[in-house]
Amino acid sequence: MLDTTTRPVTDPRVLEVRDVGKTFTVPGKSGHRQLRALDGIDLDLRRGETLGLVGESGCGKSTLARMLMMLERPDNGTVRWDGTDPYRLEGRDLLALRRKVQMVFQDPYASLNSRMTASQIIAEPWRTHKDLYPSKRDRAARVRELLHLVGLRPSDEHRSPQEFSGGQRQRLGIARALALNPEVIICDEPVSALDLSVQAQVLNLLNELQHELGISYIFISHDLSVVRHVADRVAVMYLGRIIETGSTDAVFDHSAHPYTEALMSAAPTLDASARRTHILLEGEVPSPLNPPSGCRFRTRCAHATDLCATAAPPAVSDGAEAGHVAECFHPRGRVALGISAVA
Image 1 (tube, one colour):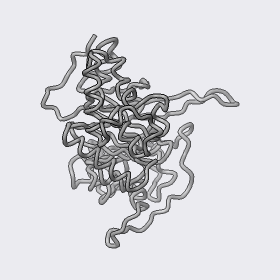
Image 2 (spheres, helix red, strand yellow; image 1 turned 90 degrees about the vertical axis):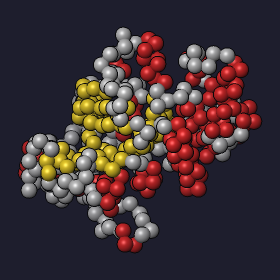
Image 3 (cartoon, rainbow, N blue to C red; image 1 turned 135 degrees about the horizontal axis):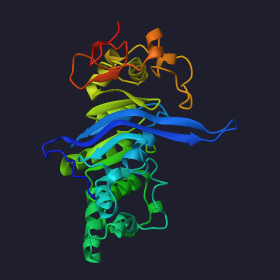
Image 4 (spheres, helix red, strand yellow; image 1 turned 180 degrees about the horizontal axis):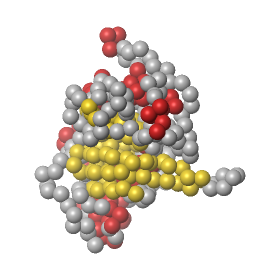
């Protein structure tokens, strides 16, 4: 039965994630161990915005993406799309919700079936969602329309993926994601496998589609320059937690968390006046099988104190911009949200 706990239409949020956790059981020589992939994730996505999600490999970005795609079920916490909990839905109600969230994958060479034509790839979602375009004529017309929308020729509908370049393949993947008229597209490293010039074309296409269709994006990437170009807000992940969120300018130019500061210092720039002193993090990234107590970043942080080992840090505002929050006892700005930050 459809969850009736919905928000007013005026609410700008299309997605709310609150205190979400996910643990996997990992077999080993000494028995099974628990890997805490996500731990207390809080996240909002607003209508028509792009949220950049950044962090080191293994921090939990892909697990979070799979959960938002409803491919994984959280162990605790809540996920709500338009105020609806997807894990309480079944049958047609769940199928209808799945239309709203689609994905563009990292590798356009692996994510498209080489035995299918472009037309078949785009139309494949309609085999499940049969009521969206019920007639063959409607489907054929919509395929040509989507090909044109993403910058391909309608005559390309009969070509197979191996006949396209990498950038064209990714455009085809975007057309497939658009086939169900989604409200949100999760982009998992969508340009990392492409040449720089092609990256710019795909990013410009995503931006044009957002302005034309009002789509929201969650943009997962290791490339900070790309994130800065496309994102309205940024969330920084570290070892299963989101440790800092805020507007793109606030997070890049006024990082509050020491990890974010180190991350941004490593980002290349052509602007000599904007270059920062590179902050070198010492030590290895801790294993999610055995994360540090208290603050998970404390074993690599130059500002860590005894307090950081005994308690999880509070959510702290930088004091300059509403919505710019970091989980740290010693952030750059020290205005705690509900808890006094420690000097």
